[in-house]
Image 1 (cartoon, rainbow, N blue to C red):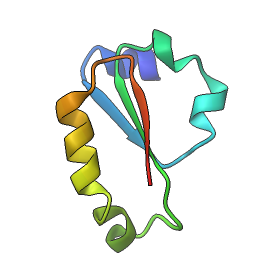
Image 2: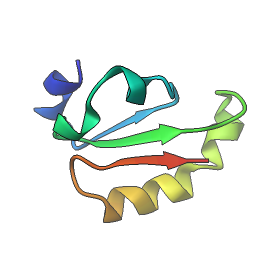
Image 3: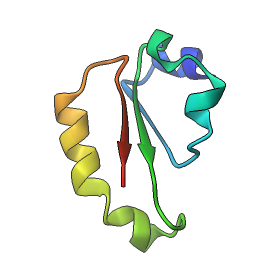
Length: 68
């Protein structure tokens, strides 16, 4: 799925932390952003968006970052 996504998208944002242990993400041509939050409610995730925007501006494809 991630290889297919890399042909159309620049970044993949996920709240599933197990993703990084399931796949070799450095081989995927995407910026991977893993959100670490107590729940997946909009209000909780919304507070992380400033950091997500900063990451999108500064990272290159193949990078993985965790935002908490």
